[in-house]
Length: 377
Image (cartoon, one colour):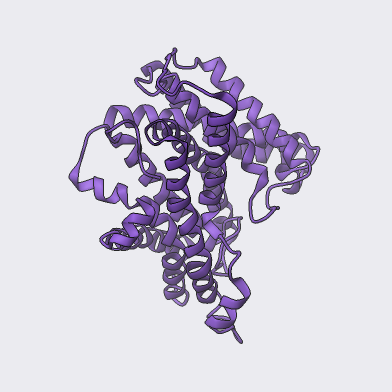
C-alpha cells in the first residue's frame, strides 16, 4: 500500500488511501452497532432506525471504497514493476504481503476472536481459540491476500504474456462520461451474473466473490490509467460530472429499495442475488457509485491535496499497518462501551472516532520499529 510512481511519491494518493482506510474502521464499527454485514463482534441490542441508517451507510461504503483501493494498487503496480523487474517485484510483494498475512493469521486473528467472545458465558481461553483459528483466518486481510494474488497474476501477464514495453506511456484523453457509464454497467452485469450463484453474504475461501468483478476490473483499470496517463490531470468537467453522479447515487439507493418493496413487496434477498431485477439494479447501482465516487475523489485530491505535508505524511505512511491492526482496537473499544447507556448512534460515533485516532497512533508507533518498517514498507 505504499505509493510508488517513479522516484517520487504522489501525496494526494497517499492521503486519499489513508482516509479510505479510516472509513474502513467506521464501516466495521457500523456493523458492530447494527448494520448488516459480517464482523468479529456485534454489540447486540439495536433499534430499527439504527439498523436501517447504519446499513445504508455500510451499503454506500461497500459500493466503492474497496474497489477504489484496488484501483490505487493497480495504478501503482506498473511503475513499481518497471523499476524493480519481475524478480524483485515478486520478492517485494511476498515480503510486504505474504509475511504480514502469516502474522495476522497466527497472532491478530486469534487474539481478536478471543476478545470478541470474551464477554460471553463459557468463553474459550486464548489457547483454545488459537488452536481453533490457527492458521487459516485472514479476516480483514482478505484484501491483502487478494492483492497479492492479483500482483502475481499481473507479473505472469506482464512478463510472459503481454511482454509490454514498460517505458511506453502513450497517454490518451480521460474517458468520457459515456465510456465511464458503460464500464460501470458492464461490471454491474458481471456482478449480477456472479450473484446468481454467489449472492452477497456468501463466501468462498473467506472471499466475498460477489464483489470481485469490480475489484478485478478496478485493479486492471488502475494499470491502464497509469499507462494512459489518465491521472496526470483529470478534467474539471469529469470531476464535476462525477460529483453530481455520486450525489444522485446517494439518493437513488433508498428510492430504489422503497419503490421495489412498495410495488412488488420484494424481500431483501431479492437485492443480494438470484435471478431478480432488484439484484441487477443493485449491482449496476454499486458500480455506478464506484466509478463516480472514485473519479470525484481523485479529481478533488488532485486539486486540494497534492502537496507534501509533514503533518500528514506520517499518518499516510502508517495506513497499511493501521489496516492490519484495526480489529484488535475496534473490538476492544466496543467491549469497553458495552455497558455504557448510550444509543447505538452514540456508541458508533464514539467508538468510530476513537478507533481512527488510536489505530493510527498505534500504527505510527509500531512503524518506529525497524522490523515493522521492513515488512510493511
